[in-house]
Length: 480
Image 1 (cartoon, rainbow, N blue to C red):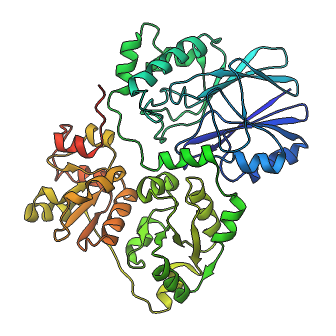
Image 2 (cartoon, helix red, strand yellow):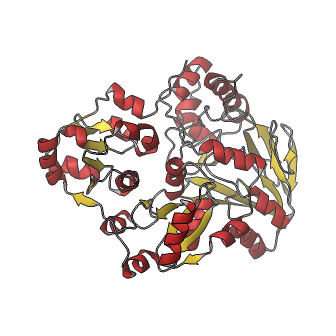
Image 3 (cartoon, rainbow, N blue to C red):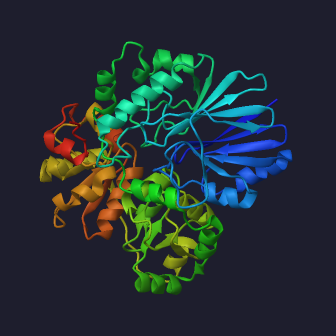
């Protein structure tokens, strides 16, 4: 009998897959750190025979190079894939033997032109499982705007995606299990389900993009409607996945430099590195190294790093709780931030105990915010939540300033003014407050409890009206 294991990483909302049959294994869409796959194969006493990639990922750096180097397994892509390293480009319909099962290549362009799904045929040749990559999600499909070329529009790609779904995927038996590359929280789709598996039959019945009566024109309209701009680090990750990157071991060795407070300060001054504090928002607010920014490990750490730091080549100095340095470096590498040059030995406490300067961010309650709004005006309140959250409900006359697009709208803000920042619960508002602080905004205040606390207080009228300026800040794409 064969085994299928979904290895799901919540921070990236990403599913990698381990398939095993009769002493042989394959891994689909591996994460950057490959030791877990090696350990899994060793535990079963099997050989990893193939490393399959569904496409050139934009939201994370895959571990295909390291896994191939450590196992000797070829890296397999679908049609149209051209890489800067040794790989095998499979043909549509090509079949790979794995123990007593077979894996069939289904070229499913649309999300990207090389996008490929892999169909598992069991020991009896029965179509059993579909590893659908970013072509089909649970409740959604892949966004068609991440692989544009001068001769391919978003609508062109959406048209390819429609054909792939109708001709390659919806024709499969209803009982085939769907294993997608992502779930809720990923920026590779618009509105994915929290479920991480389903069946073809359920998706045909429940997924808006798979409606039987849907024309290609209607599909293109619905799939492209309301698309927000993708995170700016996506093209950098695509480039790394396509052309190659340093080994994970090299990255870890470079980052494993425990620096004293004096050494940390010297490195910061010498390199201009980003000072990244990964403690919780509450811990950070009480005290932090001036000019450091907070992106907590307790949230969607890696995607927020990618979206806000953007330049994967910039050096990073890490402030992490003791014992969480390696985890922090690993999660940074997953989105291509390989230039961690050291971490503060002993964490923030060591900095504080050495008598160095410390900064803070003030937090106020919803009732205190109401008093401040009455005094200064509602234009001083920044809603840092995502466009969909804001559109569903927000405090009346409060503008939408999604954290995702901070780098786009920061020029609209006045460094001499006071701003009160809220999100849903405090994670994102502290990120925004810390970045603004580091950029010279001295008067930033966090709203404790976020929008829920504001709503529960009864002191703020809410609405779902969205003003045009807010739409512009949200990076909503206009599709011709």
